[in-house]
Image (cartoon, rainbow, N blue to C red; front, side, top):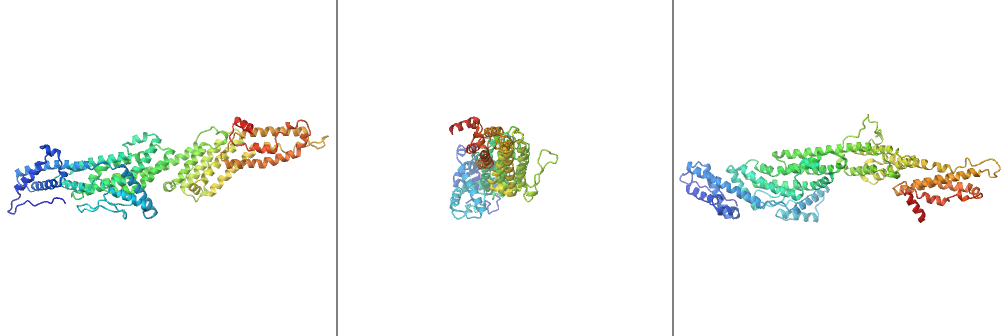
Length: 629
């Protein structure tokens, strides 16, 4: 219980009791650290009895100061108050320092985990399970209490000022300083403010508690980086720091800052000075809060590039999730700047995300590489773009709110495809942007296909890449839902059309050798077939097929199912045609000289050769395969 003020006025009308003043002055002087070695070495607030005596003495002296006791006593009282306030300031600082070790990092992360688990349960409208209760018990140990039945269990201050811990669904205040020390701090603060030492009180409190907050920041891995420092970091290092920042920011706002605010309220609530707890809170956390949010601000205004989009969205999601807690913790008039900074950062992160998406679209359209990929396989651009938009689809809940306008084509840009969204007019802006990205990717790939000298390989390249696009869409539930089956069928038709064009370009000359035209002749040859023309036809077929096999074995269709389907499609045309041709004309060759020079391959061997196609084999590998067979 706090020492109560005692009335020292005498009943006979004397203004003050000189003997009471003398006793109080004696107590004050006893603890004058400038005059006594013992006073310098010992602290008053380690002994409850000494605390009671000293605070009574301070109260007595203060009454003399306010009661105009006369010039001599007034001078003595003023001097005693100065000594007492210097002593109380030292005691105030000592109590704070003694109990201002940084929050244990395990406890910080335990609180963070508890917050995340509780939020998930709140979102699902489910009751907490036993595991959550265990985490809550661990948290409540930090607040000096334990309960398995209520997440709002509180510790009552002995002064009766209310609960020490108040909990919301996300804010988790913990006991930073033991309750008995909080009570001592409050008693000292009231007397310092009453004596006119408000500024000194705030400065001491703020400097000590800010050091504790800084130590907690270090344990959470939050570095003191200027905006310039952040912008100079390479992206790989920055990604790691962003991940750490997101986790740490939740703990800082919901645990560290919230607990500091509550501590301020309980230390200064009964002091009487207007808004002193606000001033002390801001003195403590304004610098760390600015340091914390400066990191996110630096990211929001940094140079835009496609690889930054997803971490910017992670930051945006984390900040928008934290915003209610920021507004709750920094709800004071003096902390307007913190709330405004957080809101502005959120807005800039949203604008950065929109800008990056637009720049990504332009980058896809204008990707300049002209060197054809070997074998007509999937272009690195295709893989990159489709992996990118698959990730975009995973951020759909966020981006649906951020992307509000449809994509638009610059009317003066002749190097961009025409846009016709009539078939997908029911789609939202985000889905239309993804369809537009796929459209400009195809447009770019069509341009790259023209760098192949072989028309068949050009079509194979388009087939491979559009097929990859289709498979990536089918492989993502979110992406498929946004693109829609109608546009997916259109893309499927596109790669099938490319496969048809490939077969025509690659095999028409081979199949042309297996026609009857030009082989029949009038004359002495009883069958009406020109043996010389037939021999030339077989020689042409053999040479063409051998060349196609040699070249196209080096080409690549990376998707195994598509590769087999394409081979089957080729054989469905080639095998019957060759079998029929042999059936009609084999006897004419075999009845002549050296038939082995003209019929070099059986139907079965031809089918085996076709199965070698699209494996990406070099000439050496093809030779080694033949030898092994």
